[in-house]
Length: 125
Image 1 (cartoon, rainbow, N blue to C red):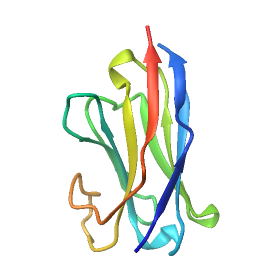
Image 2 (tube, rainbow, N blue to C red; image 1 turned 180 degrees about the vertical axis):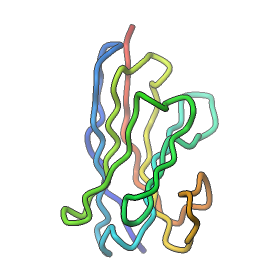
Image 3 (cartoon, rainbow, N blue to C red; image 1 turned 120 degrees about the horizontal axis):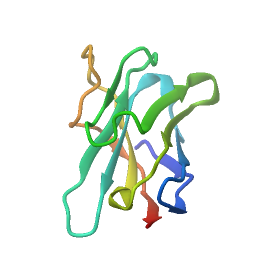
Image 4 (cartoon, helix red, strand yellow; image 1 turned 180 degrees about the horizontal axis):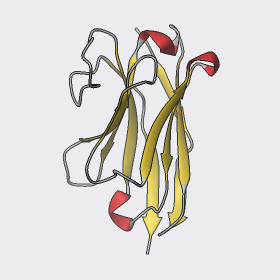
């Protein structure tokens, strides 16, 4: 069973930036479409962003478009989520996810196979 290891969460003030990282512990990240999701207290988990295996196709949720950027470095076996201009409503637990079975042109927003343990992001006003 694949394990995804996340890092980079923390607390920042509104307008600040954070970068999350995610690496699989068993197989190489190049095998997977990678995604990021988040879950705020009392809310359902929601899609944030996803990236194709080669990094040539991106998909960002409207709520983060222009502020967050997903990327990957297959040589470093890592996927990233750069979060700029953070807002208090971005406060949530952020989860990395990996999709091994999809081969769509646009990275999917659901149906991921493996999940990280989650990392807390807190944005204060």
